Length: 206
Image (cartoon, rainbow, N blue to C red; front, side, top):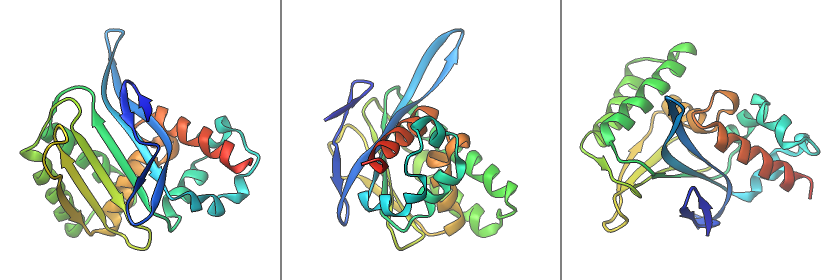
């Protein structure tokens, strides 16, 4: 297991095929010099992604972390991607849902892609999280299959019950969720981006 802030992440998970843990990090904020950690994040990607990133061979992790074109290529590469997010601090699901909604909506609006269909898809997500409560160690997953533009979002609390899942099929919303977590310098968790850049830099140099 790979430990991310005392939370275990398997080095590999299998969706339709085995995906490798290529990056991990946390989301946090600082209040009065105190670091408050909210979630631990694991980014799983089909290792085949390396064939789509060859032009960055030889670049350092530091350089890659600041190269948004590199992360755009990760987002657009036609390979399976999977995010596993584990709650460190208890929060209401509604807080997380609203945060996701406003970040995705702002990104869509900036690209002039926020229409009724996008609004409806975001409402579906907010509604899904509305009734949830993220106890410590609750797991949120985002599964992005390679050849499609939908996402399956899952939630399970304390790993006991079967995860509850919704499928969101609005391509614009799906792309912006990927950008929220994987979008380079504008992503939600800088530590995750830095980890992903360092791992891929290493893998590309092999």
